[in-house]
Amino acid sequence: MRLLNASGCLDALTALEVARSLDVFVTKTVTPMPRAGNDPVRIAEVDGGMLNAIGLANPGIERFCGDTLARLAGLEVWVSVGGFSVQDYADLAARLDGEDVAAIELNLSCPNVDEVPESVGEVVAAARAVTEKPLYAKLSPAVPDVAETARAAEAAGADGLSLVNTIRGLALDERTLRPVLARGPGGLSGPALRPVALAAVHACRRATALPIVGMGGVATGRHVLELLAAGANDVALGTILFSDPAAPGRIRAELEAELAAHGFADADNAVGAAHEADLPTLHQRSRVRVEKHLHTGLNVAG
Ligand SMILES: Cc1cc2nc3c(=O)[nH]c(=O)nc-3n(C[C@H](O)[C@H](O)[C@H](O)COP(=O)(O)O)c2cc1C
Image (cartoon, rainbow, N blue to C red; front, side, top):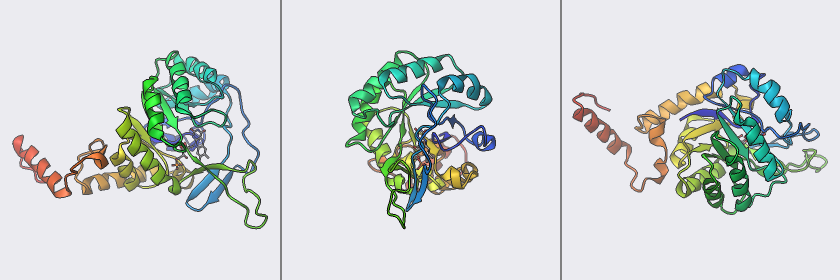
């Protein structure tokens, strides 16, 4: 299991130590042209999380490749890309193919990009045709059947899924009753998104064989364990990084304790536990491990 940051929730150039405490650094979504993003106010705190309407502010792919990428040397970098047409995604993937990046995450939850499964399939297929890099399809849970979208991404050649992006929410000013964010609605992230993320990961694990990066409201080791059990192979931290930049170390330690308490030898052993038809009890799992040790001649209990 690897611990990543969620796209847009960590700037490695200003918080290098935090990026180094993760296994993978995922960039904010890069678009073909530079974007200033939306006008402020772009972030609001709400019950159970936060709303953001940053609007994909980024330097554009050319400046990203010519400047930003070199400054990320030493990190395992996944580049999140977003566009407004199938061709945009193909151009971005082709541009990154020769660069020193470990994977490309296709942000398929952009405004103006139709999110019916067919178009997800088209975008993934177009990117697949022009790059050898691993392609992760980042999906929105705000569709009637996210598993169907996941199957479309898999059929088109995706190597993995990133689940989930934010869902649309609205906050109104206490006094004026006008929307708090300048743009009106924004993407809801944080604790309120966690059950949504769990459901999406659980459904997609049943629907595809693709590795899954789970994210949405993760703030503790217990939350990581639950996403693994639902079927995630890796986990990303988003909103928590704004309030607790030390979260990666803390969460890793909490996860170790959770795994031990549940009798898992390591994090990978917990993947999919929620799907086991007859999930062994903690007692049974401990016994299996003791028997394994006895077989190898080791007299180890536990
Ligand atoms: C301020 C902010 C900016 C974000 N920017 C991006 C982005 O550029 N691309 C993207 O795919 N997701 C973006 N996201 C969504 C996160 O990557 C993640 O999917 C979502 O926040 C759920 O995880 P969390 O609840 O742990 O934050 C952003 C989220 C926040 C809060």
